[in-house]
Amino acid sequence: MQHVKKLVDLPSMRVSYGAGGRDGDDAAGADGMTANLDPSWLTGEPPWRDLFGSWLAEAVAARIPEPNAMVLGTVDADGRPATRTVLCKGVSDAGIVFFTGYDSQKGRALTANPYASATFPWIALERQVHFRGPVVRVDPAETRRYWDSRPRGSQLSAYASAQSRPIGSRADLEAAAAATAERFGGAEAGDPVPVPENWGGYRIEPEVVEFWQGRANRLHNRARAVRTADGWQLERLQP
Image (cartoon, rainbow, N blue to C red; front, top):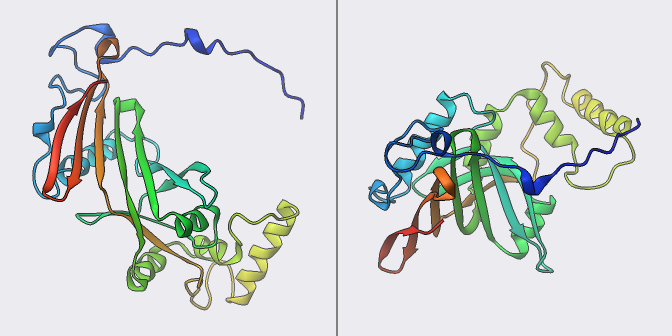
């Protein structure tokens, strides 16, 4: 396939936040809010939980594609960072949960450095939420509950894949998936597919949670909750 090179003038690209450039409290953003995000919105224990739940529900209601998608950042044993998009599959007062292979690139990075960041980029609503904190594996029972909720095809694919490892071709990948389906009695129905031994959940236990709301002239609102030895510290950040 031939690709035509197209030059994109990145410096000239502009996005107007906050209702066409109006300033002040009358300038609602794409989220429809005229009120400016403020640290006082962070209430409860932990203080990020209620607002994050509300914003996530509003992203779902707004039909944002993959509203539970988050950009996960890790650092490997050599200190090299990497980011990728994963799906958040659990939220509780303890933190946010995702699932992956323990031997994947991110799994190996988390073994070396069990700390991560995650950003939910709801750009269509001019909102973002960013988490940072230590990472722990969830217990096997929680992994099993999520695994049992997955479609059979997703289970078979996860079982067949040596995640992040090289493979010769798409045909080789499909052959591995077909062999796994045959092993468990078929792609549509058959024997239960067990949870792979090298697959499970991780929980980011937030130390820092930051909320971002787009506003006119790049004078955006940022509110942050930081966990300290004495509790949560709430603060406004400059854009």
